[in-house]
Image (tube, rainbow, N blue to C red; front, side, top):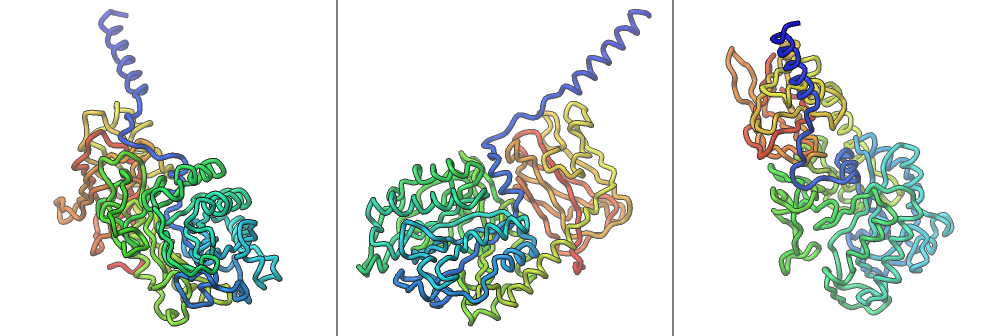
Length: 495
């Protein structure tokens, strides 16, 4: 063999080996933990408010309620969790104790608990019933225990935190199996019964609970659970109770103290920073969008005809899950201990609509032509990764290529009104802007644009588009891309 041909073959082998040994892109910015990845994949869960307030027709009980009023005739965790699952929700958060201090499990920390109620002759444990229902139906469980306790005589004193609250969450996090989220909120201090004192007690919400130590209980007993709070540390509040995230929604965030006089639970209803996050945030701290199915969080009979419609829920889905957040929908069992018929109906219809819309990715079987593939390695970083079932396999570009294009040639002319994009967030949130074109009347026409992508971005078009070719353009990114999903879908009634 001549030296010329030997040189050519050697060069070819070197180039080939170089391509196929191409390293993955370097991570960009803060990265999610395994618990945060699991939370992201959950996408939707429900927080369930049920307790003395259900029987007193209040949203916030004063703390002086007699445990004897809690006696649901037909409580069924299976019905409640089953309806949530039918709605497409993958988890529930049980409000084990609300601000009135009544505990839905038998606890050694207070007499104000379910063992003092007539429910199951004092032998009931609502939290355990939810645990069993979740296990049976394959739903994840989370728990909320209110830091504020309007019943406890010790509230406002150091011994409440050490001997009551921390012991309560210790019981909850150790007795009820694996949790996907431990949930905290910002309603802290004010008027209450407080063991008969009937007075106002104020605390410094930033120091009183010793959050680092309190969160440490969750980290020790539930190491894979994310911790939700107004400013994290695992998942942040989106800044409103209307169920939507910003058009730009960054999973990265730098926590800060709320403005004076605007504390959550004290007239504080919106926080634009929580709604959008911080592009240069120090921590991976994605947003939860919480909203109640009814006007209130607890059941009120006069709200039976005010349950959110299926169309409203779908709109909230696109504005929360579709913007990279998770949707936390409030459910409120009635005095029987069941979800009311109207609630059941709208949730089931919502679940059916989601299933019909997203059952089939209309881009499956398409031919994908990328302007650049990292190291030329199609098997490892090629655009075909966008259409597999792995949320973390991805199309990547060379480090120098930050604004690539992708042409998707569909198998046939296709009608769609929803576009889905996802990044491999194990490598951070990278892309800052995209545009989508459709080939219509022999020319490319822009049909959509978006900013942040992250764990999920759903672009809902105003009208159905018919095309056999679609083009994705990454228009802004500080680093090379790591895009993991591209999908086209059509809502059954869209036109």
